[in-house]
Amino acid sequence: MKEKKEFILFDNDGVLVETEMWYYQANYDILKTIGITLEFDTYQEIMIRGGTAWELALHKGIKKSQVDKLREKRDKLYQHFIQTKDITINGVIQTLEELSKRYKMAIITTARRVDFELIHKNRNIVDFMEFTLCVEEYEKAKPHPAPYLAGLKKFNTTSNKAIIVEDSQRGLDSAYAANIDCIIVKNEFTKSHNFEKAKHFIDKFEDLKKLL
Image 1 (cartoon, rainbow, N blue to C red):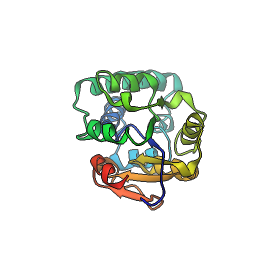
Image 2 (image 1 turned 180 degrees about the horizontal axis):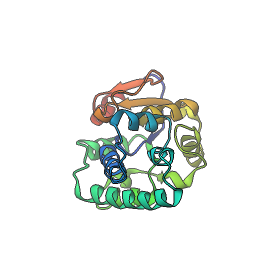
Image 3 (image 1 turned 45 degrees about the vertical axis):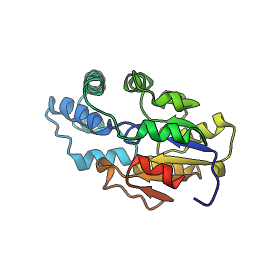
Image 4 (image 1 turned 90 degrees about the vertical axis):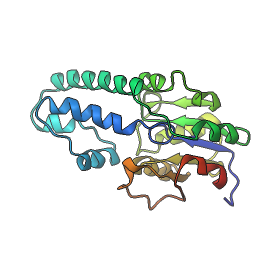
């Protein structure tokens, strides 16, 4: 990489931990209880634009009060998944350990803080980070630039000194809108997304060591 960077901003889900499929599964299972089949392609379209799967329930005429209860059930099911399934991505810890010697790093995620803490309980990933920002801690979620701009502000730096690691079109759009170069790490879950705006591509997380 020609331009020297000093800061790395990581997405969480799908980059540092393999959680995205389980979030989809939790949404799928709960929506199924009210007769809605959440097709994978539909979910991807909603995900890309930063929407919510509960739009489908509201469009069907389900009252918001019932949707709120269903959302709570989804949250509990997702939390069950992230505590019982293997969500480890090989090589993450070793790669972060090496990168931490040369860069200051942070995690910028659209995950809720409560879920984020459960995901990283008994993991060492956050030990390498200067800070983490969850969805409650910035103005608007991805694909809006606010999350990554908040990261720059917290580091007290400018966009040209930072680089972002993402796996989704929504995250890439957020990075692009914040005018920060973005690396896309290949993930089967988001392989249909449009990544034309990305500066760099890697097949697996460990490849960051070679690129950076």
